[in-house]
Image (cartoon, rainbow over all chains, first blue to last red; front, side):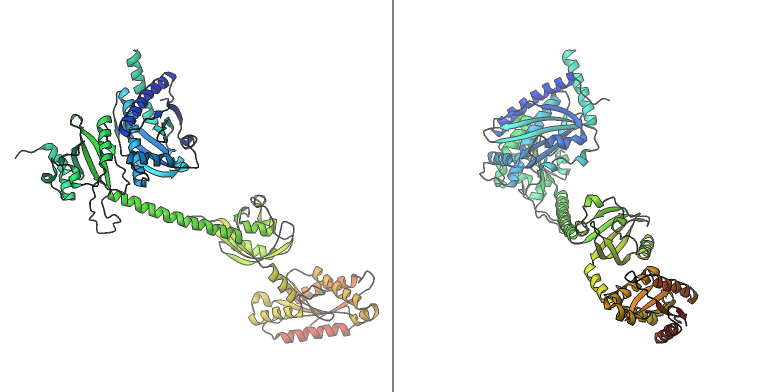
Length: 204
Length: 426
């Protein structure tokens, strides 16, 4: 099956993502007491070997990051990744733990909490739009350099990857980070079928 | 007694499960939690969790409960955290690096309308321990790698090394090798090892070297090589074949050590400064070694002593400078006429001694006759004729070398006595 998306499918996916991101922004404001903005999502399909390069092109490769990854399974399964700089993560720790100097554990837990809200809201909302269900796994966070976020050799087995990315920005708290929803091969096929079904339902 | 199926199910699980609301009031506490916390259901149900665990950050817990209820999806604590949600002792006696249980804590929505969630606690200590031990091992490997890299850097900058393919194509060389031979690394790689070989000579050494290493053995010895600018360098070499998994030679590795200065001193010590032939001391050393060890391959030789005829008269007539030129001229004739393996030395005054290896007396006579003719033909300083007389004898296996010298001296005396410019066999 062709893994490329046609224009209608891309438009629909972008529309669903806009709704999901809107929901995520609202939930973040409600749960974390922080009013932020999220950029219009960018949707890209690339070869697995290009993933590392694509991610590195969106961040400063000289900095250290908290990279949190969370898996989700179901008809539409994949991996959500939230990348936040050390500085932003520290600000997030301060905000969520009410501490001037949050500990590494506090920061890490805060990043996981934010990732979970983002991932759960965006993916749940997206899958809700597509009339399917997903299960989330416990996120794991690492404090690493930009080159170590994605190991090219580890993703080489997959042929195509969809990258849905956006930027989260809490201006007041000086927190911003990049969110990537990654899905591959079989899940891309399922996503296309689900989108087609939804388009059919809407437009007949 | 009535069986409550969800209770039976949750009590049989090997994880902790509690149900609490957003006020932290406990409405369920399973068997696993009761055992691991030593707090029974009866004690805790209906009470607030903070009465038992005041150290939990309830602001964070409240937010996680709210997240689970609002998004209708689980929320989590960081599994790698050193802060334990409910501290529980670990009872592992053997090789435990964790005193407290490492926990994965998941907060799942339970009854949203009552703001109730299920807090599940999974013991992930074994996994976490494995992770810690893996991390420790990786750190060790990284440290070793760093050390190895540093050592490699030191070796590269201080030791001359080379790797070649089976047929002598250079695969890699150390920085120090490039500096010593004044080559750029890019220039050397892909070239044949013969790039460094001195033109001519040493064929026997190289033949032995290749035979040894192609037979999968190490070779050690001295080699005379040349730099990019053509300067001669002596190196002590050790060449080792590297075998593939089938035991066949894949490539060679070589380590070199500069011995040029030692060789120069050694040459000075064993060389006659005027004629550049070996001196008497060196000849004596070689002959004595051969006689002492009596190796079959070495003892088959013919001894020759030659003396320039009427040398005193040349000195008296033309002066000592021409006399010296006569000595150099005869020395060069001997060198040019004889084989590389033959040993030639200045014996003293106008006398030279020669060791012809692996020849019969008749063959020696023929060789020496040609040498005699060449000496006679070559004019000293372009004008002066000189001749030489030769005594020839064969070393007899096991004999005292003094007897051989006596015989060869007698033969030379006979050559002189019977008119000079001739060779006599004894």
